[in-house]
Length: 161
Image (cartoon, rainbow, N blue to C red; front, top):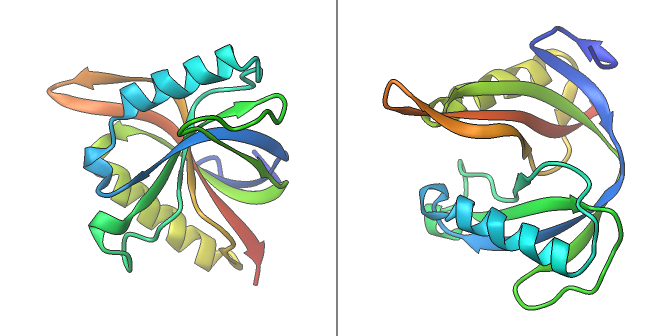
């Protein structure tokens, strides 16, 4: 249930950690997610960084104010130790943070609805955004009735107003 909130949206502390990531610029629809996750997982294994959880993305740009071709997305995996970045792979520490969390187990095209609901909940419950949102993928996407279903937890860093 987290520290506050309903079963649909909760606020909880996200532990500090380290991520290895590949950075992409441009429309979300053009990011080769499968290829990127395979590449970053292979790098983590080869570098002996120790994968410490499922893959995730950090959406570093606000699509409401950033032109689509300039959007920045970090395709990442949590790793157990900071190792030297090599090639396209970057390594960065993530601080402990308070996050509002909403489960999204729905078609990819419904992400905007989930983000709108989460944003409204944040504002209505005395919080404000405090960083870039993340999507932690909790299962492999599946195609159902011709639509790709994404299984994720949307985590939005927040602070009390």
